[in-house]
Length: 94
Image 1: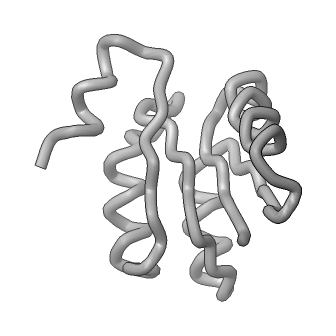
Image 2 (image 1 turned 90 degrees about the vertical axis):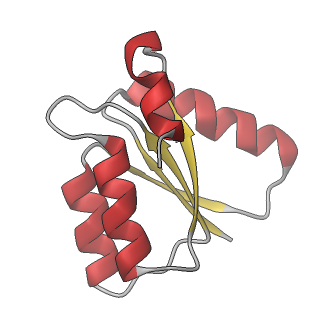
């Protein structure tokens, strides 16, 4: 299973990665610090089973990134993550 973590904070991405490693060794994880890089990877043909998507990145909104991902790869599952109380509710709109 190939999993992407899209988070502009490497420390937060590492927390997700280490948590998943505690569950199973049967996954490969890739970290993206911008949504643009994640989207380009998908456009280049990489399929991710699951994406952990930060809700608020420095210059991007995770919900917008997720909408583009779903257009390009409808079968990819997305889990929204955030440390920001201000933006957490945005993950559950629409």
